[in-house]
Amino acid sequence: MSGNEFRFFLSCDINLPVTFRVERLEGLLPSTKSPNSVIDPATEERRSELYVECALYIDGAPFGLPIRTRLESAGPSYYWNELITLSTKYRDLTAHSQLAVTVWDVSRGKDEGLIGAATILLFNSKMQLKTGKQKLRLWPGKEADGSFPTTTPGKVPRHERGELERLEKLVNKYERGQIQCIDWLDRLTFKAMEKIKERESCRNGSSHLYLVIDFCSFEHRVVFQESGANFLLPSPIASTNELVIVWDPELGKINPSEHKQLKLARSLTRGIIDRDLKPSSNERKSIQRILKYPPTRTLNGDERQLLWKFRFSLMSEKRALTKFLRCVEWSDVQEAKQALEMMGRWEMIDVCDALELLSPVFESEEVRAYAVSVLERADDEELQCYLLQLVQALRFER
Image (cartoon, rainbow, N blue to C red; front, side, top):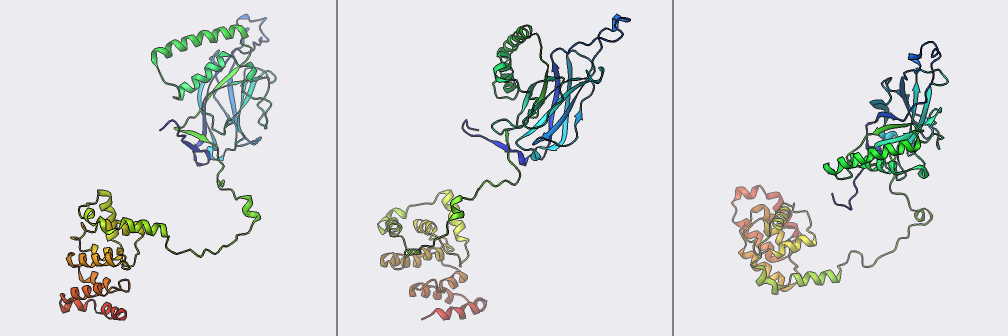
């Protein structure tokens, strides 16, 4: 694929369910003291049991049932690495489809069980489906808002993005294969990123929680397109104007420029050169295709020019005589004379081809006489098979 070529899929053509992976929760949960901490200091800290609730919203309305991950209590850190498959398919998505995720802790009370939530649009500003890892900042103590626009966006505000966010964006491209893989340099880079991550965490105090999800990737980018959309919009001018028919007096007449060019190309002075011309493999295939045409098919200008150009090399092909005679400009005396001379030296044609020369297409008396001479060589039994056609040919005799 060239660098300037952009290949893509249309979302309306993807008949697959929306799939993504809930990976992990980054950051420290707010600590909660157990009610019996005075009695049992060993259980002062509760072990949190978290799950993630995922729901799809289309144009601000819930679409399908929400799906929950399994409980995860091995934190911190909390790793689910669970594949989520929604009932909705990619072809059913709209431009404002968004995923709403809410993190719950079942070990806490009803009021404290809500950890946080975030929402993310499935298509970016360029109307391309988002792929790869996405790091969502959770809004603490809030459920995911699926309305559009949402009050719980998971995207980090631009003015708060630092070096770590820039590097994570590059890592996402690296994992999708958009950045070249160099082993020794990659190892050094990831070590440096870990140091930057530790430094940023110490500076910010890990005050935010982040949920990392991984969207499904495709071979090419996926561009949003509604099913059944019409790419060809009617012109506003066409709806306000009437069709005006203009009579062209030259319609159907011969173009003098093309006729002059054809005469120069078929000039008899080229006869010496044309005798030694041999068709190439592609030209030979075109000639064989023309020879298979039925007698009722009219040859166009390029086909006539091709047969005329290689007329000398076709003299040994008896099937080509009738097609060659159709290429002759009989109004040109010199050209007609050369065609009749070549007809006399052509390979003897069959009776069925001779009947074609008796059709109204050929008005030359010499051509019709040649066809009669071919019929004279046939026996009576063979002529009886063409008796009906011979009677019809009498209509065109003068």
